[in-house]
Amino acid sequence: MHVVPFKKSRIMDAYALVRNCSLFADLSDDHLTMIAENTQHLVEPKGKILFLHGDEAHYCYLMLHGWIKLFRETMDGTEAVFDVVTKGHIFGQFAIFNHNIHDYTAQTIEAIGALLIPTNILQRLVTQDQRFALNMLHHMASHQRMQTDEIEHLALQSAPQRIGCFLLRLCKSARHTHPTESIELQLPYDKTLIASRLGMKAETFSRALAKLKEETGISIKGSTITVHGTDSLSIYSCATCSNQFPCT
Amino acid sequence: MHVVPFKKSRIMDAYALVRNCSLFADLSDDHLTMIAENTQHLVEPKGKILFLHGDEAHYCYLMLHGWIKLFRETMDGTEAVFDVVTKGHIFGQFAIFNHNIHDYTAQTIEAIGALLIPTNILQRLVTQDQRFALNMLHHMASHQRMQTDEIEHLALQSAPQRIGCFLLRLCKSARHTHPTESIELQLPYDKTLIASRLGMKAETFSRALAKLKEETGISIKGSTITVHGTDSLSIYSCATCSNQFPCT
DNA sequence: CGAGGGTTTGAAGTGCATCAAATAGTGTGG
DNA sequence: CCACACTATTTGATGCACTTCAAACCCTCG
View 1: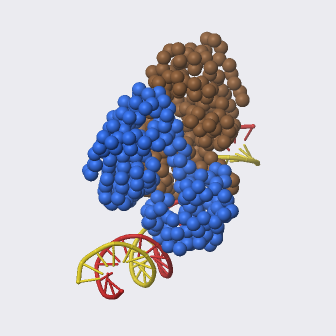
View 2: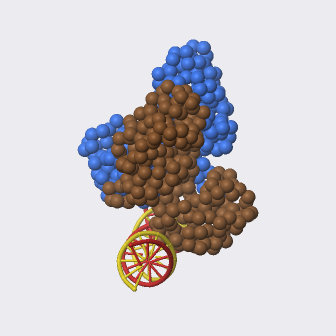
View 3: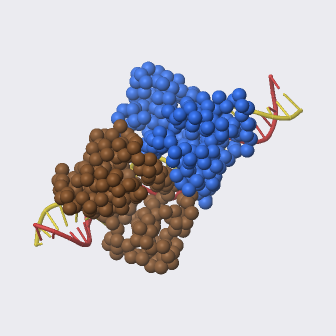
């Protein structure tokens, strides 16, 4: 594990990073400082496994840059990718409610930087600080809502629709809210991984993206996709979705 | 809404029911009594919708008997069934972390009895009682683990495997742990609904169950299924599952 | 330039859905 | 107790979506 210790002067950096994470919003300065003082700065190259499904949890991870794949692997080698996360996301924190056991495997898909937060600190805080417990509840609830949507999507949407839904989420995180304006998107990681993230094979992804282009008029040039207004995507993808337009 | 008010003498009944629910375990007598005093006894016939996806949440429901289907419906009429719950289960409680909006629809599939618990009481309690907040965290976490498994199963298991997994859960809730003994199971609700619960059509369920019989040697007589040892089921169903034998 | 991974394309197979119809099971009123 | 209506379940035939296997293409980077 490549840990770069924070110098004293860097503790304020960690403090700022921690405070910006919604999970720690509204904590007292004392608690924020206590967390910041106990973090370490983790740097890892591409392909590194941070922990395995079933491992004892020592840390949770607040991402600074790079991408991480969260997944499970079955005995026969197939993978189920639950999420792919980057800057600003935190993962591994739910282990404190699971006998301190990680519920999935985490692997870097490119070089990353992250803040390591010891789980025992979270464990202590959650029993001592009512506000943190409430933050954690809201944090878990929002995670749960996303999982519920995920289940619905897996059950009801076709492959092209799931891609459309994924693109809509990209539009949203690019703060693109106007439903008729054009927006140029960069796929955040390679198509093979997006395919796994959406529960399909790379070949299916390729064909499904072509079909999505046909159906909604998006333009595709390598990993650059131009959406000429999100309306057509919403109509096509959210047709079999119980949420309102747009579903994210 | 058919509410049968508790007589004063029945408050102790409600008290006992509430205390037995793990979500309220370890609460102080005062708080348990306060909850019990504010509950109502709900009785509803078959087919009744308790609330719709998107409705404002006034109550959560502690089941006494009967079965409830929790699901979402898309515009084109297809359903995604998330769960089917009965005696001892509680649902609707997560709305307090979702702007007091229910996240799915709840409908009776046969006559039910339930304890109605006002959500505003939970909302107050979760901010005032540290222990309740912690209970709620563990409760949500265990719900989340089940959802995570659900996503993995939908992504990786075939229809016959999902049925096998469902039967294994039935074995487990019948406290049948010995892996080589025979056990006779009653399907808890009709096959059409089990099919929806497992994300497949009734026809597929019928054929998949026949295939499961072929593969694992279970016996089927109407809604009675005899499992001659859970080993063969585990081996067949958990082959594409990341969890240990058995996965539940 | 050449190696290797990512991506696309084609051909063939599998699994589940759909549509249609037969069968079994259940509760009803006579 | 029976005939009927209605629903649940099974079975068959067919179609579609996604996968699998194989090969070609493309792009990047040493």
